[in-house]
Length: 465
Image (cartoon, rainbow, N blue to C red):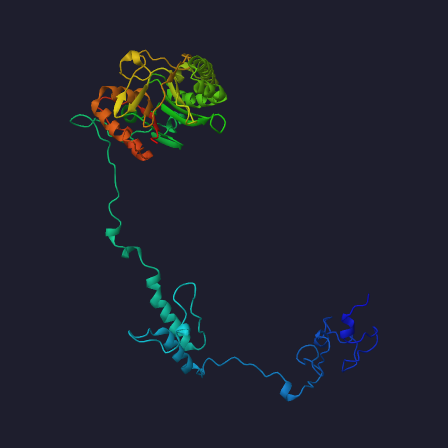
């Protein structure tokens, strides 16, 4: 189909026929520039003609300029900077209008809509860049504004900062504090034992799971700090099982036996292995807690703890150590994440403590009624990996506002023997408000003379509806 656009343009011509609208009679190929480019005449719009329109200073310097003098382009020259700008007076009056603020009680001499751009970064004033006077005024204005836009820190009043709160040294029982300083002292050597050197002096942890809030901390004892020995306690706060209502919260503490050379490694491995093994049977444990099946719960726990003991002994032999050098206790709570299940599972190998703070009163024999609240399971310490049988039981249904404390004997022993510590921790943990992690760490370090062992605790708060 014929293109209708051809009817509106110039008539078609052959490739060698001259263009009837070209004034010089040349073909398009003949009108190309020496470097192969298209001459300016061929770039004209259809119907436009440029008679004699050439550029003698570009493509064809030998051809004369046939344009009329009135049609020639005037020569443009930059103004001489040495000569005064004829518009200086005009720009001075404009600058004066925009820079001088209006006098009080008077209005600007222009309509309100055009009285100048509003202040603020969204509508900057249009720059006026002509003339040397304008440039000088712009520099002066920038110098005047710079100190206001970038205030110095020293100009901030000191009264606004205020005193930073400091908790200071932990409180203590008795007429005077213990002999040791309540802070980290000597550190283990990397050359003697890299694992001991890389064990931190203290750790703090915590989490929130719906109506459950956990705070956990472990602190190196004063005697270990003084002798440059590592912290032998460890802890774990992890979630077990599949996501959802059948999941479990594992709270665990481990206390390395002081006479065992590698007990700091044993306590860390015991927490790690317990988390792995109990997670593999999380569904069975969750079902037993939901049904209140103590026998089934104890059977699953006993099998898992037996595997922990076997793997812990295997780990010691892999590193050329005696399994007895990894001796450690283990104590744990299994808490269902389903808020409708109020039963909590307990397991233990060796000594430690489990206490309940309810309505301002302490129950220190929650898991060990035969010891009459002394906070201990047995003075004859059972420990992994040789002790591979766990005590397991189900705790009575938890009530809103309960505070359940799982700890090593570094806390359970002074808690049972010192009323000042019970009163202090009862006030800090039993008022319904959960302390911040740093506050919890500070509270846990309440000092009682002659009790200088490592101290570890994991505390569970049951929310009040």
